[in-house]
Image: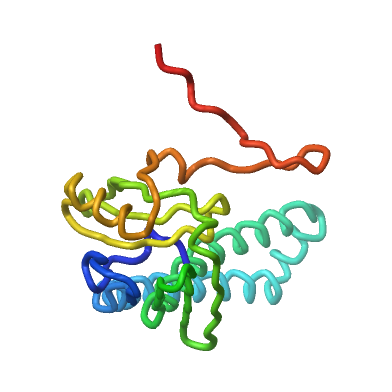
Length: 210
């Protein structure tokens, strides 16, 4: 699950190794949004079913569709669009009600266990495979939040370490030292690797400072 979806990490800041972190989502917020979104989705679904029934039963509508087949395709495409537009957010909200991530760091290894409603999966990476700790500031409609992220070259392997309304430079330095890594710029989170003739190269380089 995307790191932006988590809104709570406990304990708030790693202080010693081994450490066990639990990242969760706000179930109350997800439940409220789900309750508000379900009636809208049902209204759209009911309207779509009414339209389909009318097109299948009314002779005039069938005649128009027979003369203009492209119109039928447009109707189907429109219904599919609205289905995706409402269905995907509902799926994500439902998933947020139970999603959780446990991160264990110790003995030179990062172990991550993620779970949802129907399944749980786990993976691990050597701590040495990470490139550093980034202090990332994320802005959203609900405000600004500060994140400490253990950055991996593969973005999906990066790990959220801390989440707060403010993180000081001293706290960043302490966590980086605890994990045996340096601080890296937040832009490291958005670098992608590309393969060319079997050689992994960075997609771009930071400009040299004058």
